[in-house]
Image 1 (cartoon, rainbow, N blue to C red):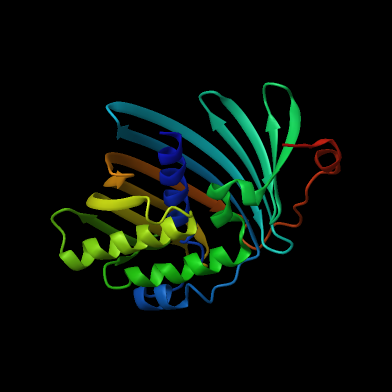
Image 2 (cartoon, rainbow, N blue to C red):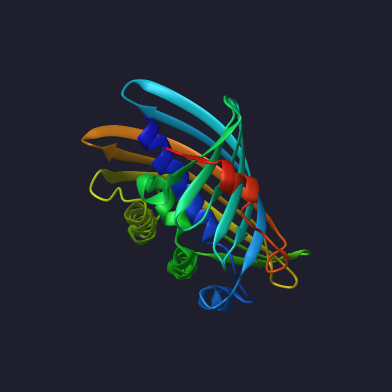
Amino acid sequence: MKRIFMWAAVTAFIIVLSACGQQLSKEEIVNQAASKDFNSFKAAVKMNMHIEANGQQLDQSMNFAMKYKKDPFLTQLTMHTIEGDLEMYFNQDYAYIMNPETDQWVKTSIADVEELEALTDPKAMEQDLERINQFTDVFEFERTEEGYKLHTAIDEASSEQQLSLVKDVLKDAMKENNEEGQFTIEKVNQFDYTVQLDKDLYLKKASVKMDVSVTVDGKPVKFDVQVDADYDKINQMESLSLPEEVKQNAKEL
């Protein structure tokens, strides 16, 4: 169940992050997304998940406060969960985690945490931007008082082409999460994806809601995930660095 939860969470998170950087008319927004450069941002992310597997049900809610810097690559995450807060830094080599039970920083190699590898490759963000091109034909485009909005809503009644598109995007996320071949997508019950920009074409909000039935190691699993992200300080963060006390005090697992 834990592996299923991590896959679903990272898959949804990747899709939301892939919204970073859109511009102008629907076609221009999608076509120029991959070339939109960004070096840093802050984000507040809310995630709610319901999973049904092996006769069990799991409900999980998490809030993330995230800071991202592209060069040199570093991400800071503060995760607020029912169990408590978890603070974390990760660069290309290591994940540094504050153990709330012992009040001790620990570190582990990114290579030992497969679920993080897709998020710790600086090139992965650019690849995610390119992925949004796949939604060009199905996005609805709307000009709002605040700026611009892209939205698509796909469910089991949608065309086979639209359903295949969602399955392909999820399969790509599986590859990045090193789970290809272990998860098989059986049915897309719902897939809602929304991106909102301000008038200066900076990303302000992104959300994805997925209700998908899959097979994991031959067993049926159903998961329902809702992720909402608010972005700020795109390309405006002055600095982000790994604190010296974290470097010095972190114990390697």
